[in-house]
Image (cartoon, rainbow, N blue to C red; front, top):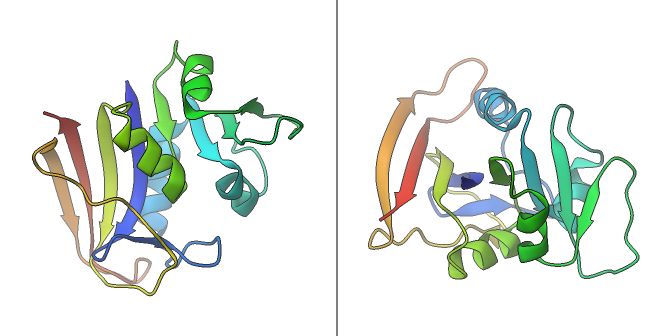
Length: 161
């Protein structure tokens, strides 16, 4: 199963200046639970914004740079190569925007696992529009803002029709 996992705003904002725009501890906790013990695929910029391999996961960095190396990570020069590396495992594509767009446009993804933050944010990278002719919502949990999570949010899962 190949899953895109992302947190997006109402206006599809993902981030600004190579960083997250909001802080939702509930989303980070869910991300850790869902992706632990699996392969996570990401572009080089996403990896560098995180800064290190995430514990209990196999990090695969996608970059066109043939000489790129990061200790504790696997390197792929295309999304297809990254998927080949992780083919024997549930795989989570964790960003960034270019990688999400490629994976969706090429039809490489089985599932979208999205946290929707019910707020519009100023951003410089955005998640591709979710085409409801291609994707079917199969699960949704809605949450109100609280003392730890500043915004209302929903965990929503979509599968390819």
